[in-house]
Length: 188
Image (tube, rainbow, N blue to C red):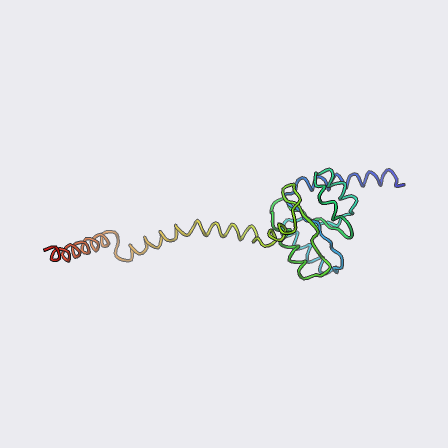
């Protein structure tokens, strides 16, 4: 039977995992079997750069943390080697990085995941993995906002290039006069 200090350590780990599950907006449970140290280091670096916390966990401890966090549906996949990747700020980062990594490594696979406190299926995880990064999405939105402004700026520049508002007004008046002259003989 484990000593009291070991039990206290395990309780602390379960409490920490439970809080991590509750406070994160998204998370994935993966099987990391068969990857070498070099690849694991690269993967962890990329996850850190995207604010994804990645740790290897014991299945029994994660199972108890899932009970406390209300994610009991994750428990059936808790067998074999298990790592947990969570994000507090971006929904798609963990899925994008880990699914991409799994494509190139046969033994590495995503087991399950959750989103906003609810367990999600593999189709949803795959869809999340295909979303662009937050920066790319923000750039797209900014581009959509800037398009009308850029068109307006080009129109104003065209007016200036023609000689200003007075020149454009004079040209429009000349075109209107020419149009009236052309219509007058046709009316007779």
